[in-house]
Image (cartoon, rainbow, N blue to C red):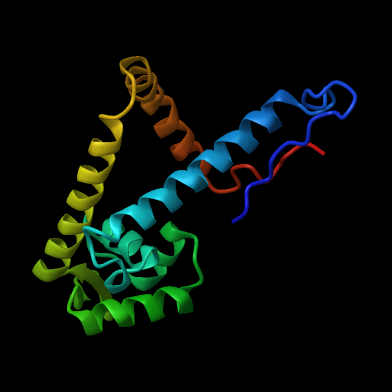
Length: 173
């Protein structure tokens, strides 16, 4: 997703004063998160065979790490169409990272569960990312490291707020 840089006011060289500061902060955060994800994805390729586990599959494995779920439950949690999740689950089944288990509450349905191989793959992926971020984090000035750490609780609350159904859908015009 390309960033949407704010165009300065040509007369003053400063940002357009008509832009709501909350919108400008949201724009900066969106751009920063996008660049962080892209930089991490591209840098991790040196340590991890990224092509073997696309991000959509990683996100499903992360969700399944907590507990087995039905495809419909996975789709709802990931905010994806059930047929999209079914396709992703099919690839994870072929790779041996998940399996189908009978649902004890309803024998007509199956739950998708992480296999030991899936757990290892997810752990390897997580550790590779942790190493890469820790190495980059160590290059920051102490004040920047503190600022990042201090921002984490608020970013976690923001992530929870965005995960709520309908979050952000009532943006003012």
